[in-house]
Image (cartoon, rainbow, N blue to C red; front, side, top):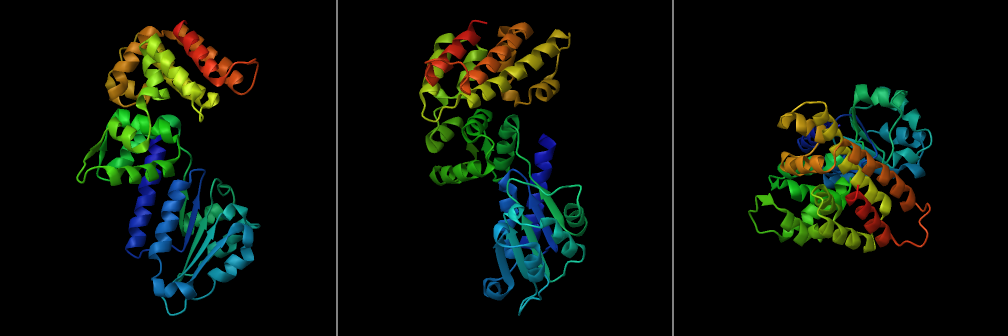
Length: 346
């Protein structure tokens, strides 16, 4: 999957670079559950396709819920007025009735029209004509949601594109805060950069804490670190703080803990097989920056395979409880502390 998001990023940045140079395809199909790249490409086309003086007569922006395929095709088949090209953008295209009928136009698009079909949280059926036709005649961007474990690497790549470095623990902290919302990371980064000294070349965890408003001391990221080391007093203190937060959601906390212990389990199974992995194999199995290898080396000693499987069984139990199952009068804070204590006692 990591290769997938790198490919998507490379494709979209290539499209943006082309449109800035005035190079356009006749049709763009922008789709996927992650809107960041869909918006990036759509916004770039809107900005660069036409001069401001040309937009009144040559730019049509509509929404899928308000139009049908016939109306879009009619607009796309018009010729530009006093301009080299015209632009037709259909936003929220997944809401449009007869979306597949646009394939008729896409088979023979006008060279003087740029048609953008932008879908949010959805995608065209890859088995059907629209997707196949645009793949041949234009450009398709398919932007799936990234996995949690991919986020620190995506953040590092994003910062590198901005000419910045970011410390591994800072990337992990930002990923924990933003989840898999790429747009949120971009917004938080822009806000933070305005507050950092001019010429800053690298971002630290302290920068994230100060400018994004995250407490590294009291986060799931820090909780997993203390659990790995079996540091009971600090782990329980962090668990109580997390559980008392107004934004706390037990299923999300359990998901983060499961991801962590699942890595430990895979690493432990590898070691139990008699292999002595080098750093390359560790990176492949764990899916984390080498900065965190020492933590996992400690964690796999504290939670060998059997204990790790017991922890994962606990997490399944508390996932059920976190979704309202058999919790009695326990508060979210009590539930989180109870889970942490039981993990420490495995």
